[in-house]
Image (cartoon, rainbow, N blue to C red):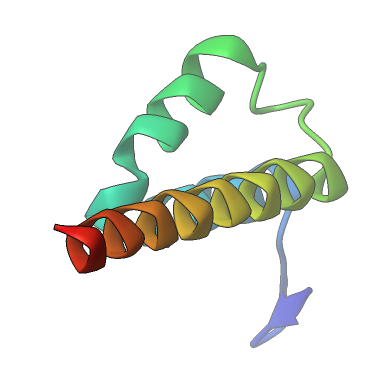
Length: 71
C-alpha cells in the first residue's frame, strides 16, 4: 500500500487497523496485542482473527435479541 509516495510496512498496517476498530472490539485488540508479535503478524492472520471475532459478536447479539423476545 502506498500513499503519497510512502510505502507502509505490514506491521504499520496491522497497527492502523487495530487502532481504527470501535470500542466494542477493545477486548479482542488487547488479546491480539498481548498474544502476538505485531511486527511479525501477517495481515491475513489478523483479518482472519477479526472476522472470526465479528461472527462471534454477531451470534452473541442474536442470542440476546432472542432472549429478549422470549421474556
